[in-house]
Image (cartoon, rainbow, N blue to C red; front, top):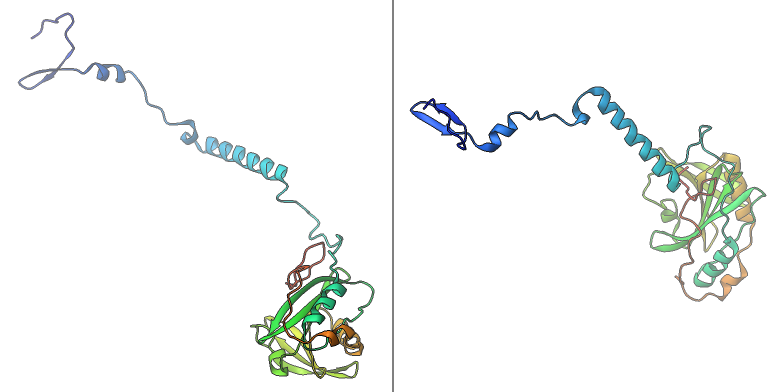
Length: 246
């Protein structure tokens, strides 16, 4: 047993005899298995994360998908203006009730125009951004007055009345809803809504009430013509965006 044999694999002593040592076992016993450097220390982990953040920063920066403005939101950008006249002209041809096209003061830029709905009736909507900061929209509909006071899913309560342009405007306010001013103009219900001052709302109400219905409305015989294309969603935000989530 004690004599070494040339060409014979080394033996492992065991009780009752010896077993050959597999050749690979002898090789691997001299090899030290090391952990990847990533997991060796906290310093290595932090360095790796730093590299990943730099790569992400440069990748996103080059694609232009984000921007950095340390001075806060930029309100100096132009508001995208839509052709409210063309929109209302087309809508008036498809409505069975008269529409108005109020001429708002300078600095009121029409940036949204679309067909909405009040109750079960169509309600063409035009919105204006005011001095790049505030927003008011006007919906016109043949829906009854009760439906006009509930133009969306938000809850509002009666908050008084305002006299403007020869019409009585009923004001409704809600905790999580924009205030609305609603007036009954005969065949048409007028709904003003927005994030603006009382003075702005009163100005819009005065001008809208004094505006004569568009003559083209007399050519319409049916309700619900093809909807005009959106210049923007029911929204308005300065700086080129279109959102009324103010």
